[in-house]
Length: 157
Image 1 (spheres, one colour):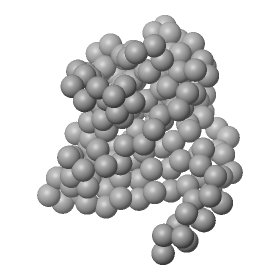
Image 2 (tube, one colour):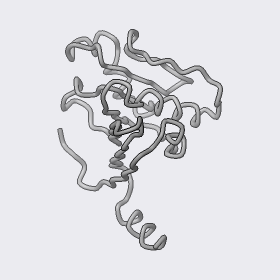
Image 3 (cartoon, one colour):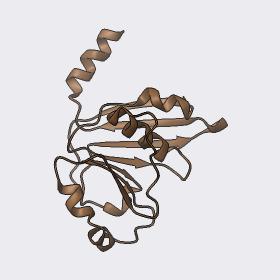
């Protein structure tokens, strides 16, 4: 897989499940966001918050698509849970290739390891549970301009 040369890493320590909403960011067409973490780390919870914020519907029911592989929201948001997918052929059979290749879709993907080198993410988000059910979250954003980020960071000091 070709990794973009420019990226920005944002690390948050000791985040509660309720504080995840403070990390929500705007979604953009064409995004393919990979979510990493053990079971119960908060991947689905974070995705739920992102979709609700994007659609401006805090009461929307968002279910994890563990048994259906993906769930479509609105006209172009896809939440994938690839935990049970065993090989790349299964992805083709469920129609994931067409969805992932469409530049107007927003794809939020749990357990992306099965994709191998076939899809380049726009962001990678890792959630790790540490002590007391708090999470450490690392967001790697390949779309941000690192020069703008550095300028913003230095102005905040």
